[in-house]
Length: 332
Image 1: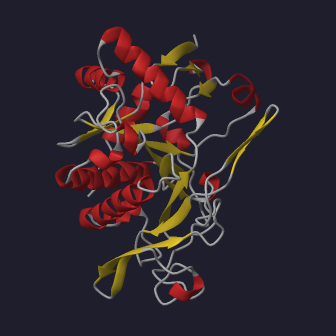
Image 2: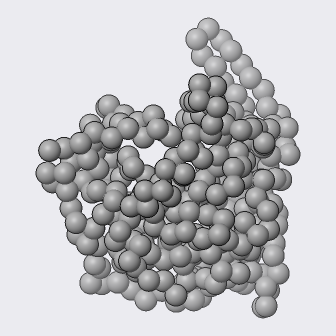
Image 3: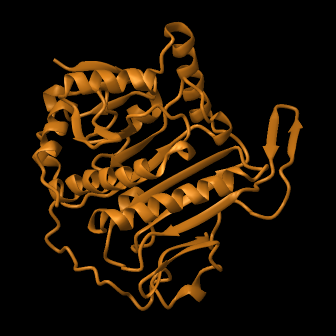
């Protein structure tokens, strides 16, 4: 019998199609023609030595032989760094000038190393770079929302193979984030608790959907997971905004993220995925009702007409089985 589950964090319904559910192993997409990725590609715009092929860097972390992490404005930026934020209302139409910040975070000089193949320290440098760019963008008076994300693989929307992330800072707050902030505040007003803290507490007690526990973070498959193997990496300490993270937590997040992605890499044969830091704006720092986290979404299925037309998702896998499968994957 199929089961409908409600995601209390996103307020979405999910159909768990148990009659056509797949075993976790069935999501492994073996590629017989898998190519070996070299550590350096002469034509790659992100490889060392090709820095002139991108706009001048805005931030850099020195490395043993040049740079370890390099940040550059996106050559094909979605928003313009130059200009003022202006609003225009005419009848039923509204427009805002397209000012903001769009940067590329080149995570390593090694073309072949996706996140899980880096060391904990190397991933920590990436996390600290995220924090630096988040704070830089948040200080811009034209910016309302900062989104940091990674696309890995063609199905996830990446066009360049070299490991990189992106930051886009927009002059408006999206409806998705505003709705989540509002729903979280409504829950806090009614029950006097952070809904995210409550979910984390329940998941830790039940244990069946936990993937990985580290001192400061927990990765888990949500009870009403929208898609197969999608996960949340949640800080144990209540924090509304990513900028509240301390050094010990940043180091632990680096380890948790690397190992969690490693479980996907080894367990599902390096699937395409997205991850995004879902955080309140820095102006909301310290609020008691919201809790930031990292959302990890493997691209194992595609959205179709029902999802697009209803806003409801069909998941052909069981979150509890997905979590058990990933828990058993060993990562060095």
